[in-house]
Length: 583
Ligand code: G3I
Ligand code: 9MR
Image (tube, rainbow, N blue to C red; front, side):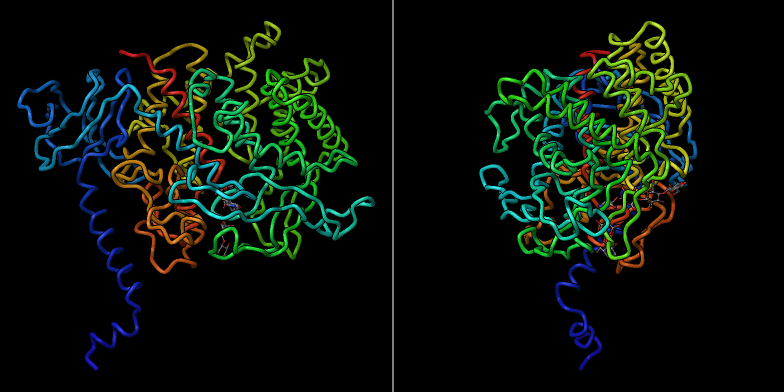
């Protein structure tokens, strides 16, 4: 046997094809680094339009209509500067003066390839819709019909109508092994489990998008089973998860189970094939408080729909109050996986932020002074939110509902939110890449969502004072996840010229369809590379902004998750709604 045929026998053909594709991808990645990086979906006419070029680019850029010789914009590149997260020296081109809609060619001295730049008044409408539709694609317990899901139609799985009470969750009324129903909800991510803590920030962010931009969402048809029905699509989609969350509360004491899960992660299979028993596991303080916050918020959001959903708003409010009381009586129950449970932990040891957020939402929804008294506003810090640090969400709601606050509180809220906006905008301004993502600690597991949550806080500040640089900085973040990054990746499946093809998402991997389920944001570069030992290929780089692997193995850089898609929807909708038509 020749060496070649021996090698071919050892390597299965599909594996060989995958390897070759991988090599090609790496070569392409090398080549593209020498080109322009820009927002691959396009820019709104009135938006700031930054393009990043390699250090070797010449001094001048020209922009023309494709095929036409006339130069519509001419300018000089900024000085070459090092952007540490990628270890790259780059130059910036400012195309903001390009305010007429259409397609353009960007030509830069010394750069052989022209870049195609799009300016469009509805640049992010399809993205917002697809980002929301991704939640529908991740619904548990429902068949996705072809008329809604297209080629990603699939059979129902995980009905969760008979979930077991795990030993860690046992009570007198519900001993170990009791069966309860806790159906519906969204799968958390690439796995099929459902976690209350992560549902908290996710539901909040989507309902906040509704509270802030109702007109945009009222006009939107997502093509989900509820479309054309009694509720706007966004509220119908979110209710799918709220219904599940309500079932995670123990009616006996108001406590909330931390998660609904298998004992270990399902394999790479479709929902219908994954039939192992599921459990609700231990109550926790974080779950109770996140639940209380979200139910309080939902009770005010769904209140105008009393006719369509009689009693729903009141039920949510009561559920929120009961969970709050449980948390006050059990203030330090930190979740840790019991020894026989190996799925996502979402453990959180710092609970001050959850208490502040829940008190805030309860105060805004009930107006009761006791909740305001529980909120130590003067001493409350403000930070960019994440699943385990939700204090920023309290500030966001307070800013949105300033009219329900005392004058002194309203002034304090304005100062603090603007203060964080100043900090993020200053980082953006000083950055070689025009991004608030600067330090290694920004590039965490789910770094793309961290970037978008920075944008979300910038937008809160912009809504308070209209300072343009805050909006421009938020735009830069969306540009970053849509292609203005050193890998020139649009990190949203199905969107842009180069997007993730192999997200760590069980349906995308197991459905036999080449294209991944669309509209999902990949977690993004993560120098922690916690999955390297489970991957057959190496990460191309350990540098913070380059540590990304478009491979199904890479749950630490290429998974999808509901709490990552929510800020994508929020930021994309906010920029679409807030960006002035002209500069
Ligand atoms: O809390 C420490 C902090 O003190 C320290 O400074 C920092 C330094 O890296 O690390 C912090 O801990 C990190 C933790 O998230 C909290 O942010 C860990 O390093 C990091 O590994 C951990 O990542 C989480 C990951 O699960 C592993 O637990 C992600 O945030 C979280 O998004 C991810 O969530 C998973 C679910 O468990 C299961 N479903 C999929 C989902 C997405 O991958
Ligand atoms: O698929 C799991 C993913 O959803 C989680 O985010 C990740 C971290 O908890 O874990 C993944 O499961 C992996 C497990 O942790 C280790 N063995 C390989 C599994 C993925 O194939």
